[in-house]
Image (cartoon, rainbow, N blue to C red; front, side, top):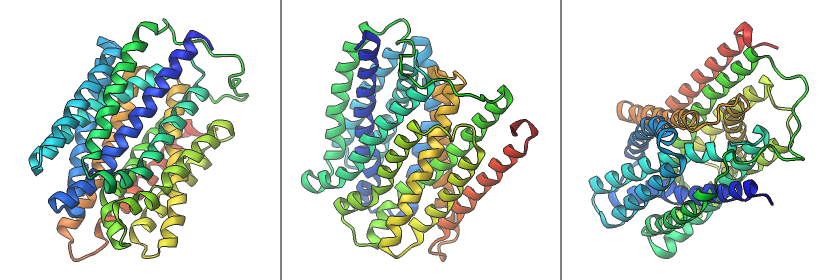
Length: 390
């Protein structure tokens, strides 16, 4: 293994640890607010929207800061800020204090993801960099969601603070050790990497697919963050404890992981509109089904479709950006800011619907589904642009 390969392996380790820590905290934060402060679906959606707004603004700036002051300065700063927020959150037992801690943790996280995306893509073939990056974070993401509820039942809600806190300290130390070994360019494309594809799209077609994926990915996160915010309500509907909710409702994360593996090895989907359109259609249908069904079996089936759709939409967004060589931390910041915009908008629409149409039990779900359909219209409009065809 070359020095560059060892360095990139260290970066993937940072990525996996961070994904596990982030999921333990943020995915179970809404259960924490439900069980400790009595938050219902509307209040959790409002919280999710607020966190998404902060993530949008902070990610956009964080990518610029990483470029200006250095990637490892940004990483270590992010780990330190997150650790401080987690430690504070474990000690603050009021709604205001818990929300303030969540904001601090959120800002710290924004310094980390755009930087890691840039580091793992330096000197790598886009298809390989995106594939390994996605599989790494998705694997630990799914594992954390699966195990998080069990950790809470075993150790209490302190687990969502102290487990990520320890992982932040570990990442800070690993980043400190990796920093002196960063190559000028973290490795040229290695032998055996995926060869360039025949029949490359024109620059105009490539930009069009990049724009379509950039549109679809925030809408995917509209669905994801809305789903996470109301998952305590879904769990209550089926009488699931946090542990059983983690076991049952993490299925889509494992399907997404499997989808990432498939998309890494099977490249025929590159620059094919049909794949994007099918995934988006599955996203809308499965999202509405997960939130409205009263059948546990249908919930499981819908999660499978949801995970597959999210997998393709997210993978497309990152692949088309890196394939166009948009792989520095500023572009990573834009990518994460777009995710934050979706994280903000979906829950905001859902909360507003529950506020103004409380008599309709599924008003939030219907409103967000309509919003997703608007995104589908935008995707088709971009495709109908003459420059997009080919």
